[in-house]
Amino acid sequence: MAQTYELTGTVKHIFDTQTFNSGFTKREFVVETGDDKYPQHIKFETVKDKTALLDQIAIGEQVTVSFDIRGNEYKERYYVNLSAWKIQKNGGGGDTSSDAPDIDSQFDNEPDPTDDIPF
Image (tube, rainbow, N blue to C red):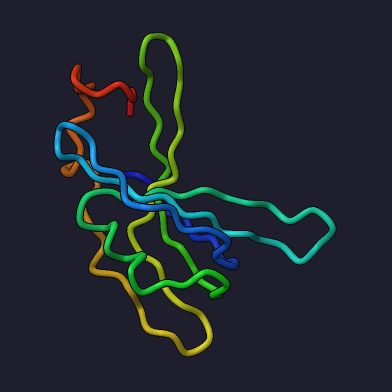
C-alpha cells in the first residue's frame, strides 16, 4: 500500500478547475511552508470529486494537506504529482475531507489519446 504524507502551511493560490475532453477533472493549489528565509511553495492537485475540497478553503488560511505521491512515465519522460485527498483547516476550522480513498481505484493510469496532456 502507498505511503501517505502530510504537509502544513498557508494556502497561497487556488487554481480554477480544469476539465479535459475525457471528462476528467482536476484542480491545483499551492501551499507555502516555512517561516524561514527561503519558504517553499508546494503545488498539489485534487482530482475528480476531490476538487470540491477546495471550495471551502480560502487563500491565506493555514491548512494541513494529506496527500499521496504519484509518479508515471509517458514517452520516456517522468512526472510526479502530489495528489491531495484531505485538506484540514488549522486553528478551529472544519475538516474538509472524506474518508481516505483507495486512490489506485480512481485512476486507470492509461494515457487518453484524446488529451494533449500526458497525465
